[in-house]
Structure formats: structure tokens, C-alpha cells
Length: 135
Image 1: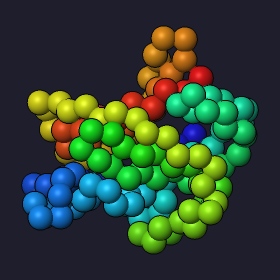
Image 2: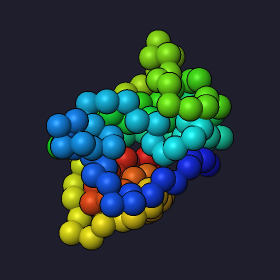
Image 3: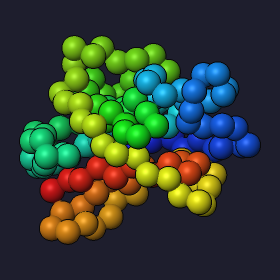
Image 4: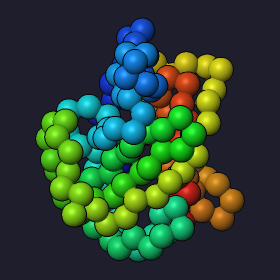
């Protein structure tokens, strides 16, 4: 189960540089949504971007970049607000590529879709698309 809040683009620059006035500048912490931290809960061991992840409830956050995003899983779930987690509680961090669409997605969306022999968690907002393989 993935629980997250869904902010809207509202004409803003979402990802980019601070100089461009991006809402979420490259290289900075993002809670993958708004309000509460995004939570990710699994009831069995899975492979998350090639890494073993034990059953449990975690917070999931990102550090977006122009070519790749760092996706982190943290053992501290149920956090509120913008504040960064205690990075000492990070269970793992992985780098995944970001691709871009010609279409704009107005509201941040997380989907889960089939992929090969497993699935992928798909993060979509504005023109950015990030796919995280899970098995």
C-alpha cells in the first residue's frame, strides 16, 4: 500500500533549478507529495530496484535530479510536514532514471503497473516520469 497526498501543478515550474523558481529544485529533499510523508507498506519481502526490502511500513521520499532521482526508503513512517527524515533511519537509497513526456500531468500521481516478471512503481508529475522496479 502506498499512501500519499496529491499536489497540483497550478501553472508552476515543478522540477528544475532554484534560479528557474522551481517548486522542487534539483538535489533537494521531496516527501513525494504534500502534507504527510508518503508511506509504503508491504506484507512480504520484495526486491525494490534490485535491493531486498523486508516487510514493514516505511516512509518513501525522493531527491529529484534532471537525469536521475534518488529514491529513499526510511524506517520512520507516519511523519507530518516538510521536514526531512533522520537519514540515519534510511533503509536504502537507489538511483533511478527520469524520463519526460510531452504531456503535462496536472496532479501528482503514483501508479503501480505490471512490468516484465514483476511490477513498477510509477511516479508522474508535470512532464516527469520515474519508474521503480519491484518484484
